[in-house]
Length: 339
Image (cartoon, rainbow, N blue to C red; front, side, top):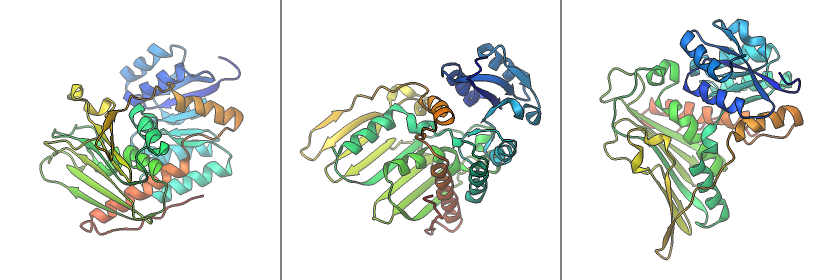
C-alpha cells in the first residue's frame, strides 16, 4: 500500500459496489483495503479486482478500515453512516443520504463536529447527457429555463429486489428521484416554494413501491420542474424536455437501449425559435471524476462538485412529495437549508 493512499472499505458489494471498486482501482490516491458482504460470491467478485483486500462478513468488524463507501440499501444508510462517523471515518453514501431530512441533518452535524467528509455518490450528476445539457443551458443558447421535465421508466414488471420495497427503498419517488431531483436542483438553483407528489398503485401487486410516481417542484420564481418514474408507461416521455425563453432541449431515449434504456445517454436535440434544430454531441467526460474529487477534498481541501447539503435537500423534497401524495397531491412546502 502507498502510505499516501486513502484506505477504502466497501460495505455491501452489489452492482454499485462493483462500480466503486472499479473507480477506486483507477483513481490515484485511493486503495481498496477491505470489502464486506454477507454473500461469499460477492466478496469473491470484489477480490477479482482487489486481490489483496481484507474480507469481512460483519460490517462492524470492517469499520476501522478507513474511508467507508456505503452501498447498503437506503433504510440502513443512516445507521451505518452514523456508526462510521462516530468512529472517525470519512463516509461516501449511496443515494439517498437517508430516508428523512432530520436524519440527514444529524449526519451532517456529526460529520462537521468531527471534521469528516460526508458525501453522497450523486453519480447521475456526472452523466455525459446531463453534463452536456447543463452546459447548453448555462451557455444561454435556449434562454432562461422556466420548465424542466424529466422521466424514467416504461411498461414493465418491477424487480423483486429491495428497490421495489417501499419500506427499504423509501418508495418509487426516492428510488430514481434521488438522481433526477438532484439534477433538477442543479439546473434550477432558485428557492423552492412547494412540492406536490402523486403515487399510483394500479397493476403491480407483488411490489410495494408505487407503479407510477409524479413529482412537481414549483419555485419561488414561478419556474416548474417535474419528475416521473413509471412502470406503467406504455409510451415513454422523453428523458428530458426543457423549455427556455429562446429555445428548447429534448432528450430522447436511445432506441438501441431496449430493454436497459435507462443505462444509455439520451440523444439531445436543441430546438431554436426560428424552427431550426441541432443534435448536440455529448461532451466527453473524464472518468471517475467523483472519486478523484474525494482525494482532492481529503488531501487538499478542494470543494467537491457534490456536497452533503445538496443531497439533504433532495431528501427533503422527496419527503415532501411523499407527504403530498398521501393527501392527493396537495402542495407541501419542504424545509430546505442553504447552509
